[in-house]
Image (cartoon, rainbow, N blue to C red; front, side):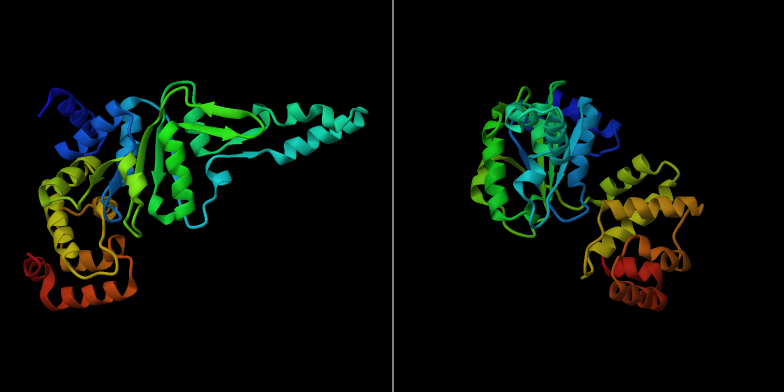
Length: 296
């Protein structure tokens, strides 16, 4: 492994993110090449956390744009502060001034509300980490607009002209693959696919993030989660659920798993009523050992 990749991997681990060489390499190249990094994978595998830990490693601001169906340009880029503008117009009228004479004032930067994309471009203190989370939830029109912004890192505001990035942000886009991302945006980005962790990695994550969990508990949690993901569930539990469960069990002072404890805390990792009922029946019938062994 190259020294710079090893250094980044160790830095990410020091901030609680266990990164394989592939992840550290992709993040390093995205920084060095000033290219957006598109991270795909199932929900809960740690895609968003990559952006968060990168911001901590670099020591910069994390700017997050949460995508959803119907997200429009104004919400993502900028809006005018209409309330302040109206107040300034009323003040001008009270002063006997023609409102038209203060048009340049009310359409200046001080009346502009910067949304995540514009904030990332205009940040003067240095490059921010821009997280465009769940980009697959946005529609094709917004994706085309986003591609334009990420291609040149500049935007045009009719009243102000073109604003260019003083510092090109580090950009991480995440996708749960709920719809196919367009080829044009894919070509603009470097690409990383993140899978659910192996048993050994999941144990390392538990020990790093939940220090109160014993080695035995971490291993038993990891084995159970590995078996659980091999089941046909409505939604496979991710690392976030693993950590929630580990923290819950640690707070209950558990040092190992037993059927009663798993049944009582199953809601930490399984979030569907039918899945919970089915798993509780299986645990009551065969116990934890049989459940884990059957999925190995």
